[in-house]
Image 1 (spheres, rainbow, N blue to C red):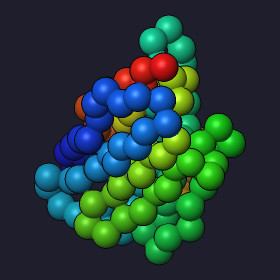
Image 2: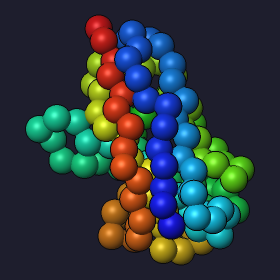
Image 3: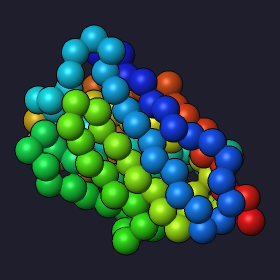
Image 4: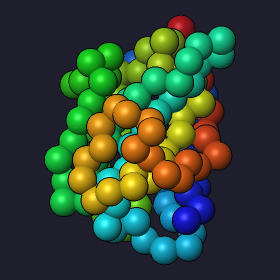
Length: 120
């Protein structure tokens, strides 16, 4: 599994971005997928996750602003972006088909990350 995250960039506060996560080796249609982020000088934190049949979980900090969805690609639609959303965003494939939630140890494969910068 080789995960590729894309869609990051520079956006003004209040703007939107859509991140994509694809698997170049095979579809991850049978696995849950999650998004995590790491801001400079901070620990990695959970953002959102989705099971292969659906079932989504969000961090409190992004509820109502971010939406995770999937077909053969997993998306993270980010609206009403804030400067504190600035981070490198990583997608990860869960070891299981279920929604793996916020436990990073349940994720087997990680993408290389895409940088999101939100200016004030």
